[in-house]
Image (cartoon, rainbow, N blue to C red; front, side):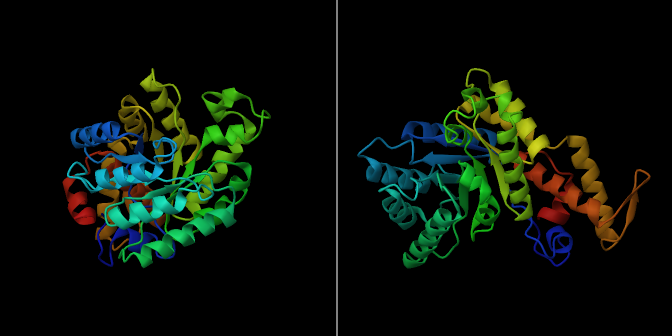
Length: 332
């Protein structure tokens, strides 16, 4: 959590913008109670460098949707959720179980849900209706907080509307659903577009990822990258995460196998030397009341401070140690 004083970097460097939230760099999907509890155990071991997404959409067998939503609420409320970094993916707005998911999960776990992920919004109008319903039910059930929302972009129409979707109230993350996106082209994009290397080279996919990364940055939300289907080679997930971050501005990525979590987090981490430099620059800047300073024979001002501050925030989100003086000054 950033400092709340008037001299905090967010207040000084982003006075007229919404700064990016500090979120773990990986989100791990788990559909069954057994896998959810295993995920929490791994979270205890690694620390809160990844979120656990308890999945109602794909996790619930047909006909057991209500029972599964109650299960997810119970697990999120349990003693195993030590860090409070567990969210859920619900059924889409058009699905009959959408309203049950909302009423059960918010009614039973509204105070502990880290986020709600909304899949398959075909356009802005659908996303808006879903968001408005969630806010309405949250207030009706007396939950005294705004539950962060993660909205999935999985079709050409959703990509077209992504700037408006990213601006919806409560939106914290924009997720890219690559497999559904490719499928929506009905064969016009080959199936090899669902994986590397084509997912980073096909013009239509590149265009979609670029639009999502840009819209997310413009609205102060995190862009979260799609899954890596290759679960036998964890390094592939790390390689995909690195390209997603460096080429398209994604700062978070899905994991579908426990062995993918660490490679994703490591790929999303800033370099330790860059963290040290950013901390030193920001300490000088604070001492200069955020005026220009010189560091390593280079001029720095608020333009570079904004970048350096994001480096420190990403360090916190990915478990990279921040020098003690900067930790005390900016995160205490």
